[in-house]
Each structure stands twice: as C-alpha cells, then as structure tokens.
Length: 390
Image 1 (tube, one colour):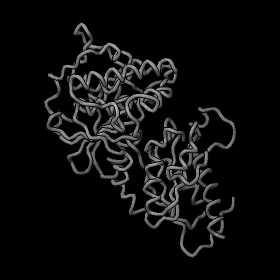
Image 2: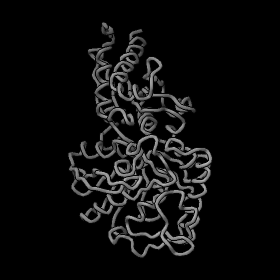
Image 3: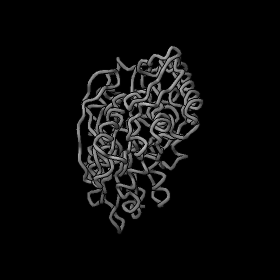
Image 4: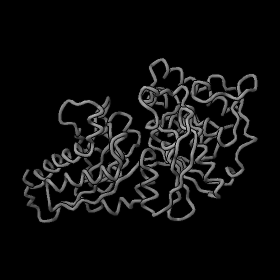
C-alpha cells in the first residue's frame, strides 16, 4: 500500500501512548505496532513512544523500566489459592518498591471458566507487600487494576497479619462472599513495618466502594459475576465498610477509587493507611508525558475495550485529559466497544476507532492484536493526514 503524501511544512509528530491490551499484547508491543502503522501511512512522521499504564496491567514495567529499576520474583498465593510466581520491583531511586496486584491476584491468572469473584482473594498481593516490607522498603506503590477479586482487600490484610472474624470469633475463609459474615477485625498482628511505611495506591478508577457505580456493579461482571452475585457481593462490601467504620473509625465507602481492584483500594486505606492517587498521572509523570506531548500534533492511545468504565480515569481518559490541557487532540484505538463508550467524547477523547476489521472470535482477535493495531493505526493516520493536508 502506498504511503500518503504529507504536504504540511512541519513533520507530523505523534505521541503513541497505549496501555496493554489484556490477554493480547503488552503496552510496549502495542506502541511499536501503532508506530509501524503510523509510518506505513506517513513515512516522514515522527512517532514518540510512551507506552503507559494506569495502575492496572503494565504498571510495574512502566515504572521500573522507565526509571531503570530492578525486578524481583516471589512465589505467592494466586487468586484461587494456587501458588503463582509474581514479579515486583524497585524503582531507579533505590527506595520505592512497586507492586502490580494483577501479577499476584489478577484476572489474567484465571481461565475464563474458573472466574469466581465470590472466592477470589488478594492474599498474594499482601504477600508481595510483605516481601517489600521485609526487605526494608518504606515507600510502596501498589498498582490497582486487572484484578480477579472482590474481597475489599481483606486477603491482602490477612497476609499482613490482620484477622477478619465471624460472630464466633473464627477467621473468615478467603473471598468476597465470606464478608457477609464479618463481625470483627483484629489488627493486633499487623506487620510492624506498616505504621512506618508510606503506601500509595495507583488507581485506574474513581468509583466508590459500593452501589450502582461501585466495585461489584461495574467490575464484577467481567470477573464472572451474574446479576445475582453482583447484588450479593455489593452487600458484602457494604458490610465490610460498616465494620471498618465501627471498629477502625474510617469511612471508606464513598472515597473515590475505593472500588479499585475489587475494593482493594478501600482495604489499603483501612489496613495500610494508604493514599490513593491517579495511576495514569503517576505513570505520565514518570514518562515526562507533558514535555513530550507539548509540541505534538496528535496523541494516539489504546486499550482492549472502551466502555463506560473507561471514563473513570482509566489510561485513555487520563492521557486525553493531559493532552487536552496542552491543546493536542487524542485518538483512541480500541479492541472492542462496550456499552457507554460514546460518553468518552465528554472526557477528552476526540475520536474512537475499533481495530476489528471483520467478524472474528475473541481468541482470533487476541492472537492477532498487534497486526490489527498496526492496520488500524495506519487507517487512522491516513484520515488525520488527509485533513491536515487540506
């Protein structure tokens, strides 16, 4: 296919800032595929690659690779109780540990037919936090996103020494459904490093813990929750919130981002004195996004599925917010479109292009993610350059 003749006096400068496409292609590979599409359309273009993350998949790599940090590996309890190998890292400052909860408690660790947010646990995420604390790190960033869980962070808390008890004083079993029986919280065994540590939760959402826009209702279905299970789990998280407020004196129910990772945001606030921050802003700062985008003509971002949940400060919207402040338009390449995707036009996204070309199975689309992204990027840039040439 012939490249487009680009007639403008200045080279076309495009910032390429996708996040990972879940179960298909990592953020950097996605950025390279988009770059290839850009250059196929306009060979004289100047793409700048800034693969990102918003607290979910790819956050560890974005922060560790960008700062030239170090990786470590630990064997921890996976979301359904099996042993998994999970990476964590330390940023280039040598002082800040980074944990991506999805690597220990993530949806990608579970086959589709075994997804069960009623029993899935964040225990492995707590084990990674314990490993960082035991190694002497007192600043820990926890990336929240891509979870298989809906346990309000109680698994994480258990791994750090908190006891969640029923009316008989017995420990609760793992998972969100067990929280219906929560009556008491014993923090006397909490890891001694927690009071002296600064814990920052990098969130990819701004939703509250419960209700119609809470953890169970918005994110439960993708983890395998039926409408009945969504209602059950929402009640369980509401009970957790009540017990936390009555025994720990903290109201976590309405804090923006408390819903992150199945309520892990709320659990980190309650049990680890955590501060929640926008994950995409943290990553953009590390990537020096504003300086790179300031003189760009276009920003291209991407994610696997664009729907109403994207509006809650996930990577594409966070990137678009910063791009709009610089006067640069943002194009979103999406693996698929879901209900409410059109609301993203009210959140800084100027155009959305699905990468699918024809009816295909999910397996085929995931397998061919890089090729589909490259061709979609070429189509998008051809359209953009056509308008720029006028």
